[in-house]
Length: 228
Ligand code: CA
Image 1: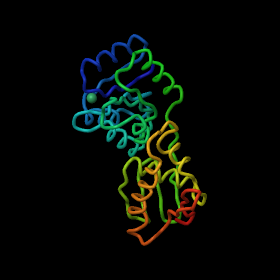
Image 2: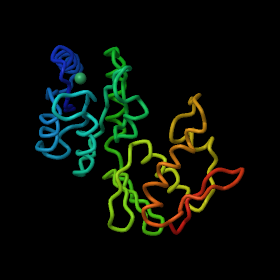
Image 3: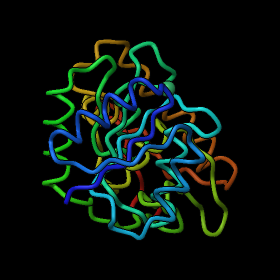
């Protein structure tokens, strides 16, 4: 039996999804706001759900928060995020925020089924390991950045940028590589956005600690010092 939790505040859409998935042999539970969704996903025995369909714009607690808190509690059920084109978050953000896949509203039911089946076949993602450079650490599972024991608040984009730098620590990465990995390969905005975000990160992970871990490599890009 395949069991799916659908967290969606538009009652009509939630019921349409439930009925449609039901006809495909899925068992569906519904939650209509973020708090109810988080509670249902957390209190149901782990592993009971094969996937969670999670709307981003939800009353009480956003889908983003629900996803973050699920991951923070060690719940790795695959999450399919529903995003609105004109919403507060875009598709790339949905993935940055810990979702495994996303669909932009409005979507066709056939596409929803295909995405869900693929997600369920893949199964729960591996809990990623904590990345380190000296005393600088980034925990992809808990979405946490720290210098020693000091937790540092970063935005999803800063988090993704730091994660990319950490995965390449000790090596210079070009602006192009950063854009392709942290924004996306089809990004056609101003590449100087990288400089701006490097500046934001330095103000958070370096300057307050009297450090300069993020080095500018002339003509090459940026390098995060291996020793942080
Ligand atoms: Ca909504």
